[in-house]
Image (cartoon, rainbow, N blue to C red; front, side):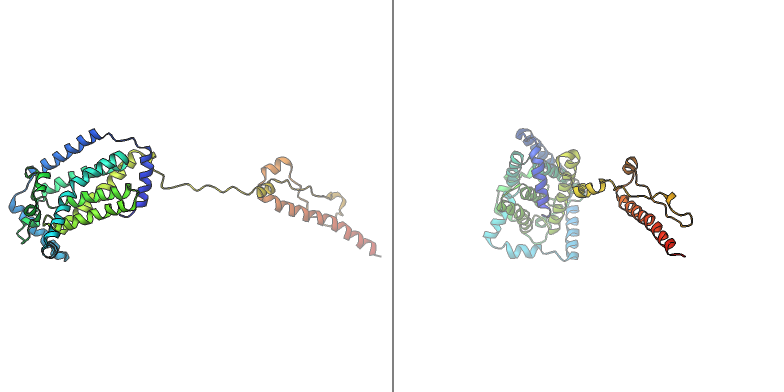
Length: 339
């Protein structure tokens, strides 16, 4: 959930200029996408032997990582009837009903976040179907690991929400139960203004991860894979929306403004140099070398001379003027004192 403040700033910027979403076309799009998803998933159900072999590969990978604890977790935490029922309800009612209600709320109140969530769900669902067809995996409840399908044993509501004809029993990897709940949780955390609503968005994917493992429907690796897939789809759709409408989001880089110079500095730079006294070189004796005086710049020359060079020119001109006055005076005194 990192970057929530930045995403909320983007949400406020984009939603302020986004047009409202019409619900009827969006409902038709989502229902069509769901039917295609379940239809393709059911038609591409892999063979039982291949699904069991791939499930063993997943178990071996978890043992290699040291995270194969699914049987122990179910035996420890789902042995109570109350706990079992609680996680069954999360698995059943915390998925499609919550997704439908949240999408309607986002479409009505936060159109930009709705479009990003909808596109991320469709993108991750399409990638998920390819993985289901290429790598069928039997879930823990069907992989002969000694785990019980608590949802099927204890409840019939799930088969009403998701009929068996649309179900691929060997579509365990990745877990879109966890992935899509994570998408909905991110959308709630970004769009909600109240803290307790954002906390619900954070808790949702965590609770669903516990539910899919304790009900023997997914492995821990499935949950991680589903979360990684949908998170990547979320950021990809956000990048695409920003690319399509670059002017709707605030610019990340700002050009620093130049600080104007103080008025006193400008006045000093533009002040003309004072007229300097000059002694003609003809009044000096021929034998005494005289440093030529630098003439004061005229108006045209001063306009072409940089302001920073004016003080140096003035100091040099004043030094030449002092020399031209003091040298003849000293020479006259020497002449008076000589025999």
